[in-house]
Length: 108
Image 1: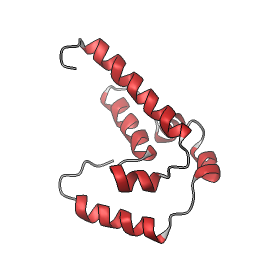
Image 2: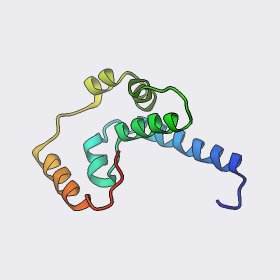
Image 3: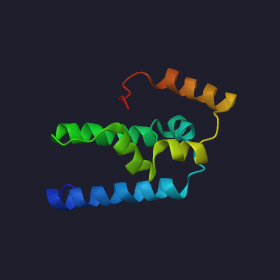
Image 4: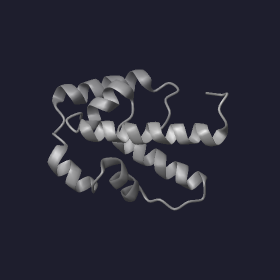
């Protein structure tokens, strides 16, 4: 993608990000803990990354507003309707992931 001009690249990246959000919205059964176990990021991480990007550009964006954008609704509503309690197996897998991935891992 290095051959593309910056504007085109930014537009493509933005389109891919919006598609990722639509994909996550269409797969609400995929729990954040499962995303963390498998990919070391979740919907909350995306929200934090948006806030960080806004700060870098001097724009104001608070975490709750970013989460509402990522989740497509207020986080409390999403959590009440779509978030299942973590199982013992999920918690153990997340701890194992954290223990094995601490070296060089980017903070979400």
